[in-house]
Image (cartoon, rainbow, N blue to C red):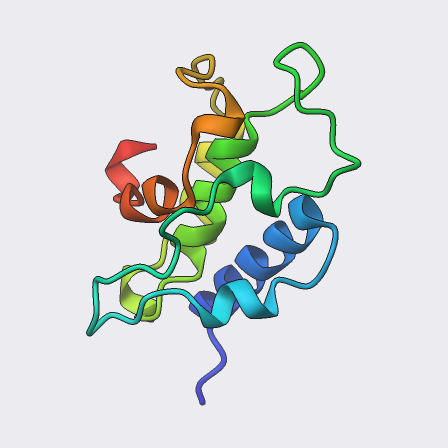
Length: 122
C-alpha cells in the first residue's frame, strides 16, 4: 500500500466519525457501499442513531452542522482513493460558513448523507 495524501484524508474521515459517534466507527465503515456497489446498508438509519448521545442536538447548541461534518467524513471514506477529496478541499469546506439546517437532525438519514457526497455539493 502506498502512503499518500489520500490515506491521510481517509484517516481524517475515520477520526471525524469517531468524534461525532463517541466510539470507533468500525462497524459503520464496514457497512459502507463499495465502489462496485451503489447499494447502501444504511436503510432506516438516521444521523441521530449514530451520534454520541453526549452531543447537544438542538440547533442553538451545535456550533457546526453535524450533518455537513458527517457528509464530509463519508466523502473522505470513499472506497476509491481517487474519489476522495484532498485535505485542502476538506479545509475549504470546514472554513466556509454553512447555511442553516434544512431538516432537523432526526430526519436526516445516513443514506442521504452518503448518497449526497458529490464534492461539488459542499
